[in-house]
Amino acid sequence: MSRVSIVIPMFNEARHIGRTLLAAQKAAHAADIECELIVVDNGSTDEGPHIARQFGATVLVLPGLLIGALRNRGTAIASGEWLAFIDADIEMPEDWLSQLFDIEATGQADIFGLDLHTPAAAPWYATAWQRRTLRPTTHAHYVVDWLPSSNLLMLRRWFDKVGGFNETLRTGEDKEFTLRLREHGARLLAINKSVALHWGYEMNWREWMGKELWRQGSHLQLLRTHGFSLRLLRFPMLSLLVWLLDFLAISALLDGFPHHAAVMVAITSLPGLVLSLRQSAKHHDIGLTLQLWGLHWVRLHLAGAAFILSLCHWNARRPARG
Image (cartoon, rainbow, N blue to C red; front, side, top):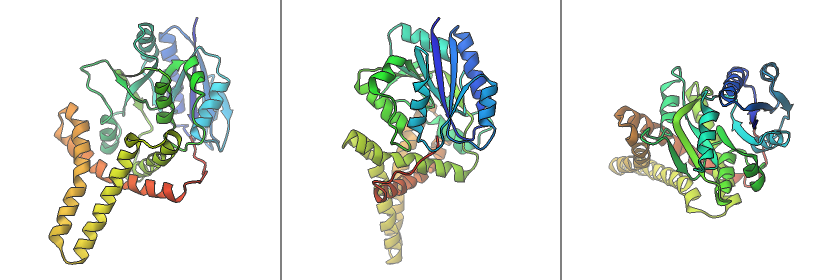
């Protein structure tokens, strides 16, 4: 019988880790495959490690490491032919493994990830932000350039082929990892026949903005590891343009040109509108479009701030928790 090793990085996830492990075990049982649970703890101060052990997981306690290093250390002790990486706050559906094994057997792809959604209890901004990534159900799966590591499934040989995750990245390690997999010939597939639930949704505005500021800090590091790329540069450059227009609007207002300032403000709202229209068109929901418009406007400003902070700390090596 084949064996899947499920590697889960964790930091203070006592609220979610039990649900995550139980769902993973159910999915392995439904697929009739042996399951090895490996939780790599980044120095939690809650009951997360104790709860993980109660579910039969092997727990490695490795404080101070970055997220890529946590996943690599867990993989180092994994014995499965298959590797799965999921976050500690993700509930996988029961048919997760069985449907992906079936797709892999047909030779359609090599690396797999399910779309994510939020539970019904999530606030509107967390739900809207997650819905923007959901793909139309007109197709059961989509070929993509990269996949997030909230859930990834692959044969072990693909991980070994690219040497695992980059251990120097504070964030964006999933995009960097799957881009390298694609460069080495792997075919990446996003599945939306069933979705995983993200229980670690942002519970307040401060948390949402803090996470986005952290996520956007990866652009400069990705440029350093992958070289100059318009694809990697376009969003940070767009965010800096928005900042420049804001500055011009404030200057025009202070100089007594309110009409010029209004034009600048209107222009700064256009990138967010374009992004929201592109992501919400498939849902045919004007309410979602308006919600995403506002969220993208905030995100663009956070991205500019994160990029500038990254430039100021080009050689910084500050640790981040997984």
